[in-house]
Image (cartoon, rainbow, N blue to C red; front, top):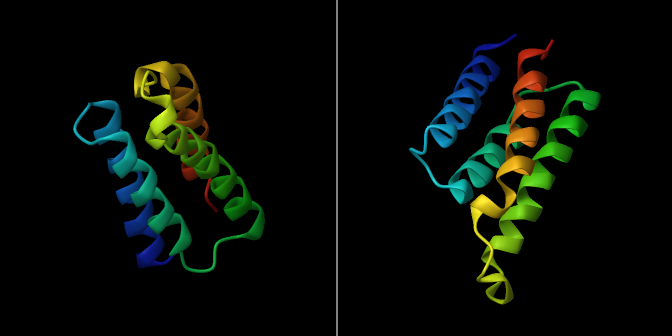
Amino acid sequence: MNELNIRHFKLMNELIQNYTEGKIKFSKLVSRLDELITNLDNPPQEWIEGAKSLWFDLEEINAVLLDEKNKDRTVETFKTDIAEIIKKLSLLIAEFP
């Protein structure tokens, strides 16, 4: 694995850890993950499709949270879903070839 990808995976893991420890907001996690996944150097197509699919699930939750009609919903509303997606993404990151 090249240096760029190593750095991006390290940053992805740090983002996930910082989010789970409450150090960053959910919206920052979603936007930064998108940047890091998109800018990987030549990842396998199957891996990128899996990562983008999981990221998109997070983005959909973020969109619902940002929608003015859903002011009664918070990150807590989706806590279980977010945790499951993050778990799958962490496993995918660990399995990168």
